[in-house]
Length: 248
Image (cartoon, rainbow, N blue to C red; front, side, top):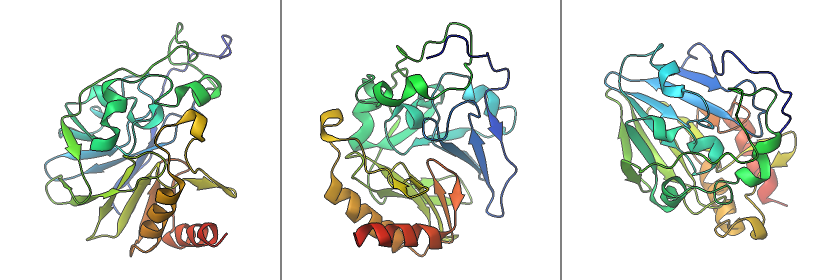
């Protein structure tokens, strides 16, 4: 990491709600491939945070200036850029097959070794060192399985187990509205599709499972798609990219 990087004053940025009541949060000084997107939905009883970023700045404190309801934090995978901030929240949800990554994180099992040190255009505080940083450990308060429901009062989200990138990669689906959160399970941009880490960098990436998860996603009657990286897209794009990939 470049020690000459500036120190950022405002680490997070948040957009206004879209037509489905979803707000996008990013860490603007982290490159898209190294940080990704978080999504906030306010229900009648809870707020749901989909992804928790890198965890190097006070995300919960930032969100509590925006919403007053308790926050349920969901990580689609136990990687540093999705589960890094999970430790800050009272309600911490992750699929049971990826829980080991947040309980005993390392730079290897959270893939920080391969991405984190070149991901920044600024740093959150003077002594931050991306080369040695390991996301803080925490215990999940709820272990998820396929078909589980996350209830935030007036809205419910179904857990989709989407193995491939990791055994425990997962997404969310709101059946009533057709919203799909693909998390890390299906990420693409400009012709690139992330298939998970190569075998020498992962002990649970599975290409055939990955393809099956794509099949599942592209067959959902989605109305809007929220990715773990590169923002929201139309379902037609997800189906087109997924179909082309599976036909290769």
